[in-house]
Image (tube, rainbow, N blue to C red; front, side):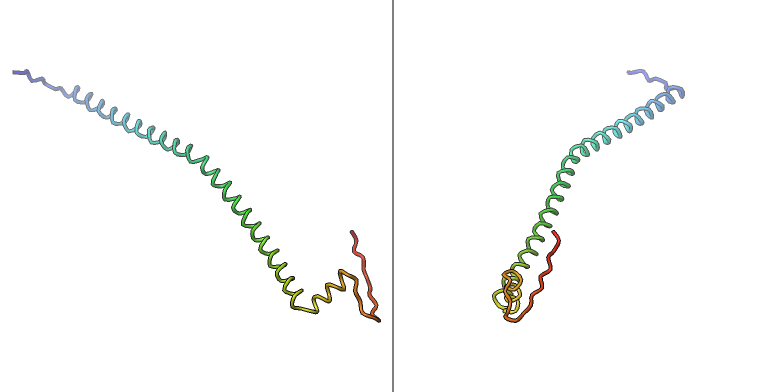
Length: 114
């Protein structure tokens, strides 16, 4: 039969202290591991975040360009509609651009500074 050992209180205290030390070490190691994983995730996400910001700025620029083109299209469309349908507008444009005037009218031209 195996001999039973007597465990003294001093030895028990040392074993408990060692167990607490192992527990604290394992908690610290787990914390360091979690921080390392977090830093790896952040390092992997940072370039993607920069690329996303770049793509969003390009999208905003293209949307602004699209809005400007739509405004220009609307201006051209309304001018075309006015030329086709509004005789007064056509007369104003002819007088202004082609220097047409009616007999007996006096036309005053003001030169714009360049």
